[in-house]
Amino acid sequence: MDMKAKVLQTLRSDRDTIVENIVGSQVSTGKFSNVQRQASIRDAKYNIDYLASAIEIDSKANFNAYVIWLRDILRTYNLEDKMLVDHLNSLLDYVVSRYSEEFGHVIEPYITEGISSIQNGKGEEFSYLDSSEEFLPLAYSYFNALIEMDKNKAVRLILDIVEKDEVSIKDLYLHVFTNVLYEIGRYWAMRKITVGQEHFATAVTVYTMSLLYDKIFRIEKKDYKMIGVCVGDELHEIGIRMVCDIFELSKWDTYYLGANVPNESVLSELRRVNPDILAISVTLANKVPACIELISLIKREYPNIKIIVGGRPFNTDNELWKTVGADGYSVDANDAVETAKRLVGDLHG
Image (cartoon, rainbow, N blue to C red; front, side, top):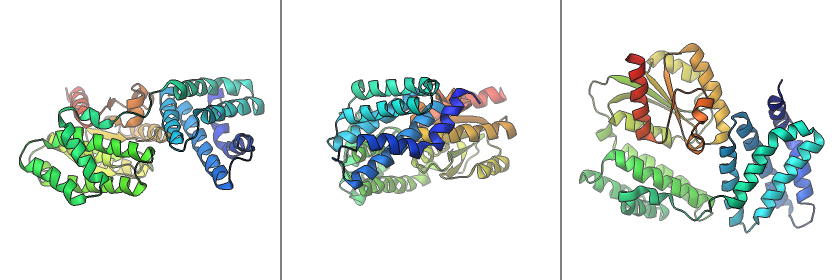
């Protein structure tokens, strides 16, 4: 077993012991209540899980993105950045003292870059809605309706726009729904809205999308087939649902499997459908190892099926798709269609 594998095994098997030691030393000042201590222990376990996943997939960029996200959340609780920096330094110091300097050599680059990101990374003062460009007014109106939890207003706004043929469904998906939901997620992380509001926004958007299906799903001859699925126990399914809808609009025959699908079921559907393309969605970096496992299984049994991956971890590290063994990567749903066309052309050319 090489050193990287030993470090991964140790971080995962000894995670709880490591956490008890490093968190215990940080909260021993007496300023923490029991509830705060338990929350610190829970969060420290997440930190180690994300660190291990980043090491496994060789992606410092994804660990950096995680610690920036965590930093911004901690700031909403009026906690200083120094607390997170001290925590990461304590983790490194403990691993070196408890195991070996060789262990530290594997972990240190991730910790060092993570700390640098905490201190120098992009702040939280931005808006995903700004990426909506010419659709910015519509995006803001839809966002505000969701924040106000006014389902009828949100749905009617979208249906009126579609009925007047002022915005294409593809543009709605790419420039309104996607950016609004990213912004909703940011608001939740910043504690500007509740988890109930976040879930409401997702549910209303899924419902609104369903009302557009008579315009998306047409009975016509389609040359190619694709399957869309979330990886492993990933539960964030709206992204891959949008990808499948955009493929359908682009005259592909689509099979949406959704979330929390066992690998065996994915393989069974590949056997039954025999698609040209499989699109896999990964929302969280700690789910990327499961993506590697699934792709490895597929490549052994169905080497001719081309695989596209997408999601936040791949947008954070745009070389990661090569690490997981995919045939291509897409930034968004429209890019996924263009990548699929190229791959299918290579396959049938």
